[in-house]
Every structure is written in C-alpha cells, then in structure tokens.
Length: 390
Ligand SMILES: *Cc1c(COP(=O)(O)O)cnc(C)c1O
Image (cartoon, rainbow, N blue to C red; front, side, top):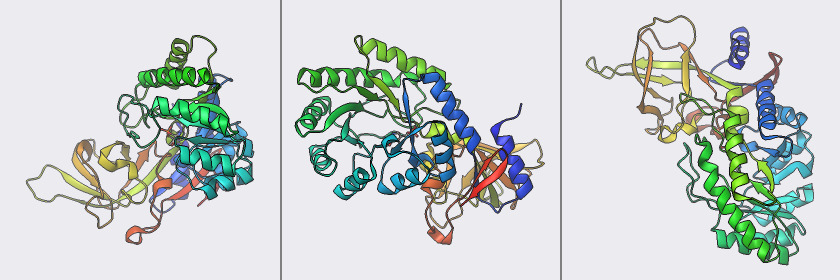
C-alpha cells in the first residue's frame, strides 16, 4: 500500500536536499482536513491551529478546502491573509494578547476573540467594539501527551460572569471554548469539559447572555510510536457528549485541530552525525543526529512525543538499544534516554534516518541559530512536486 510518506521519500530520493529537512505533502494535509470535515459533518466549523505549521503552502491548501483558522498573533493573521483567507474566517484564539494586537486584528477584519480575563475583555471592548467573544474555560481532562496544565482558561463561575460582562460591554457573548490537551489519545476526555461548558451556558443564559457556539479545541491524536484512535472515534465521542450534556438545543460545534491536520503530512529526513558507545561494556550506542531539541524536535522535551525513526537504505536486520541525542552543545539536547529505541547495528555516522509524522510542531518550534545551527528547512510538495521551499 502506498502511503503519503512514500511520495515524500520519492521526492527526497530524487532531490537529495541537505539534511535535516522537513518535507510536507500539502495534499495529505488537505486529505486530513477533508477526513475531519466528513467525520464531524458540515455543521462543524473547523479552524486550523496555525501554530502547528504556518507554511504558506499549507495555509493555502487548507483555505482552498474551506478551512477557517485559529490565529494567536498579528503575524499569524498576516500569514493567513496572505494565503488568501478571509478575515472573517480567522478566530483570535490566544487569550494572552496586547491591546495593540487586538487593534491590529480588528483593523484587519477579525471578528472573534477568545478571552478568559476581565482586563482582556475590556481591551477587546475598547479596541474591537462589537466583537464576538468566546470565553475559555479551565478544564481538568485526563492527561494528554502534551497537556496545557492550568495555563489557560478560567473557572466556570468566572466564565459565566465574563459572558454576562461581555454583553454589558456591547460585545457579542458568542461562545465557550476549551482545550483538553494536545495529543489527547482518549476520545472520552472531552466529556467532562463539555458537561462543564453546558453548566456555564445555562448559568450565563439565566443572566441574559446566550453563547451559541462551543469550541472544543484541538487535541486529536495522531500515530507516532503509539497508535491514535481514528478521527471517527473522536467525532462519535464528541457527538454523544454533546447530546448528553445539551439535551435541548445544542450549540454549534467548532473544532480547532492543528496536529491532526499536519503531523502525518510531514516527514523529516536527518543524518546520524556520530554513532558511538561510551564504553565497550555499555549495550547502548549513542546516536547523535543533525536534528535535536532546538532545530525542530522541541516536542521531545520530557520525551513527550516519541517519534518513529526509520533508517534509510540497506541495513542489517539485527538491531540494538540506542540513546538518541541532538547535535548542540547543550546537556538537555538528548531526545530519548528513557524511551526504549532500537536501531540497526549496522548504523554508522553519515547514515540517514526518516522521522515519520513530523509535520506538526517541528519547523514552527525551531530556534533561529542556537549553536549556529540554522532553522529546520521546509519543502512543500503537491502532486509529488516541489511547490515551495523555505
Ligand atoms: C494549539 C492549539 C490548538 C491545536 O491543538 P492540537 O492539539 O494541535 O490539535 C487549538 N486551539 C488552541 C487554542 C491552541 O492553542
């Protein structure tokens, strides 16, 4: 069976670009978007979380599919507009923003803003009068692989009060939002959060503010070394939670996936710079790659995301345990020392490896020049051909 990774590998084998590099097949990102839209149905608005991968070619492909966008900064607004997105399809999802950012977004035509605090709400009323506001709720879901902890959202009574206050300030108390943590492998994780949102909606409605949208965030998982549930399982779980907790008229659903759209559209090709054993007794080899924590693999922090590595070319079938590290002179730039990884015993310095499902939260997390190492280069392909290189 041919996979999206095969198209990327054909491109890499033909073009042999220098490593490390990320290749994103934008056709796959569009496919993933279509699969989400089919699973959740036409009534669900899907806002792609731009931070996962802001490549213009990705944004253009998703816009052509009819996607809306979740943006977190003026620069992300500019990227979406440059990709041809209409301003009224952008939602400012970051609850931490300066008044100048609100004013810029408003001037650009962005109509919806997420909010979780009175200060910010008053800034929105001042700099984006009449805007739609969606209040972010602090939720306590089962652990995800990369959780948000307590960073975002406010308590239910605070959320209801903010919706009421929004109406008083002449804003439109349009929605409630939350995020159950990224790479959330349990589709039931949304249930408790949706129950809490229903309670907030009821409380706010009793005081005259009637939110009509429910933004259930992103968080849908993808398959790295662990297998993720299919998107249809997430859609079914969310649908049943919505029916259970909103027995009357259910709010319109908004989904904000980042990872689930682009992760499996990307593959990183890298090179083993050094393969060594610290002592003859040590069963582990250390494999130092030309990519690490600071030039694309930020999500290996705490070994949260365990990527799949596949050596390129011919190797012996026998393998052995390895510790995988990045190229910089930083002690934290060790990718995996607890997660058990095995690589072929024939692996040598200069051999190449592919990192699968690496399209999300890689290039966008890359530092500019730590240790003089340049940011992760991205090539976008469509129909198997190069359409952009950054
Ligand atoms: C990052 C983010 C998302 C996307 O999350 P994924 O886990 O990548 O799907 C969605 N909404 C908000 C507000 C975010 O910050």
